[in-house]
Length: 308
Image (tube, rainbow, N blue to C red; front, side, top):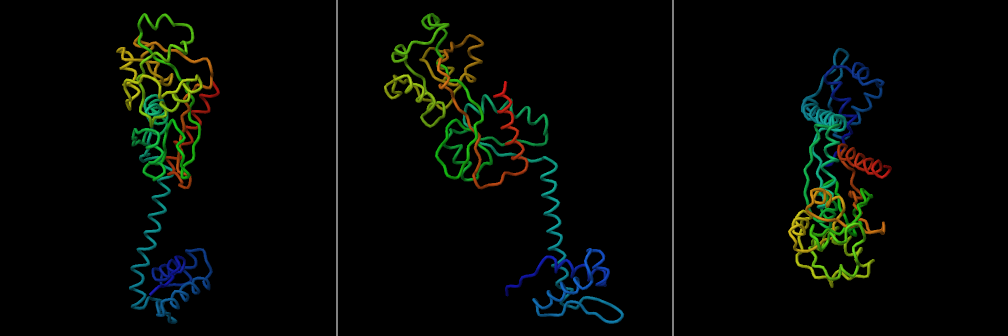
């Protein structure tokens, strides 16, 4: 039996039972007594049974009314619990945010961003999965995570992208006499064709950015002498520093090794040769309150960095 019991009707019924009075129920609910009577009458019509007995001296529930009261009370309590939980969820700023991030954002941008964010909201924690860019987008598209950070705009009608950071691409080489001879000037294009490359895997944003850069320089990445393809930018840096070849990575990723003299870094003069990073979320999903705060914070951090 499909019966449409309105929450306002149940509420009016419960207040009448608990206060043994239509007028007192109306007073507590800030309604008129005829409105309370109408709600209870509507409920009785829908259920086709008498719920409230009224005499000249008293008002009390019938046997059916006593049975309904127990369930109606539970329904109203669940409604109240839900309202309290959602209110606390949005106001107390506690909980865990699920994130997926590709290598460069997760290793070179998120640590500082999360440190600053948690200084403001210490009760928020993060669950971070490190994947390549296509997998990051897949996890966002399937709602496995709320927010993604990636280096490639993978085609997906379920996701929306916003610029997060822009990072120049640089050529990294071993810190040896051969490459020290090129210091202070652009690395010769023809020399690039003679080098052995240590490359990120083809699904990574770093690989795609490098491929586009080389194409602009008139070099087909497929024709390079690639010795190793690897999933970690840190591994690329380590292998290059050991003399296995050269590599193309984001400038931010190269800074630590360059600072300590383990690598040489050669920028490209054309400002188009930059690694673009994105923050991504599901097109049709509403972020949880804490995830929305973090999303907005990350975008503002990007805007402040761009203004410097």
